[in-house]
Image (tube, rainbow, N blue to C red; front, side):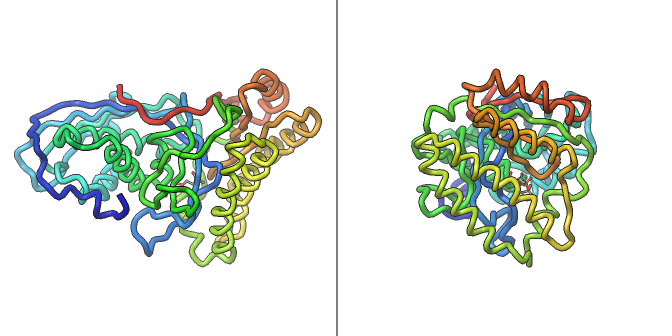
Length: 364
Ligand code: DP6
């Protein structure tokens, strides 16, 4: 599919269903090359540059959607449960998501939905649940559409699921399918699209199998500046255009690195991307800083450890103070020892989460 309108069903659904229920899990993901900035002139949630991410495995959202035909079809209606309990605070976000996806899902107003969602990561861990949450929700709505139109191809199913997830939260489109996912037009990556994420189709060296991501929870508080506001500050940002070009260059450089497993080169790009993301925040107007003193302590400790031991461990950051420590599985034992002895003290309540690369959403 190449255009937004390709995702509007043109023929009526072939099946009629009174009620049913689906359940999907979708993982979080961590970007190696960051999405930061949107092209609002091109539509909702169109990235200013392409990004590529590792899909995580353990940390995910599990969401079921029960649906039942209703009489009044003027508008949509839904109940929202979080861990089985009604959660009014989450409703506006879902309401907005439904508004965004409505043009592409003509069945929405025919049913009443009961959405029940839960996360496998700890409460208020500072881990963003919007990527996994929106992806899990999108998968369920696609399952309903597929039930109404069973001829749908698998390719369309996953592309459209990622397309819908993107409308909920940009990075969510990278949590649908694949262990390395590209989102955004990138000349050298066939099939890449601004509209949805695609599994990276190039060769990937075995060193990246089961790549580890240990998330150090530095600060679990509310962020002072939301991602949405941060993206917006890339408009009229003095370094924006150069930054967007750089993201293309970094993805181009990663393609051979994924194939030959050159971790030294991999680390340079990944750490530079993390610091560039935060440099963009520090040089926007208004400017802001999301890193905390302990974020820098951890970065320095990782650099020292890497220098001394030659262990290929590096960090990345998302839009917050937490640090993702990335390393291959073959050094897992020594890196975990290092984390426990040197880094845990910088974590809030000593908390950190261990994850590794996974494969995307799964039906339950
Ligand atoms: C820094 O996907 O959370 O994590 O599209 O406004 O929902 P919205 O933003 P979001 O932005 C994520 C930004 C990032 C980098 C990345 O994941 O690529």
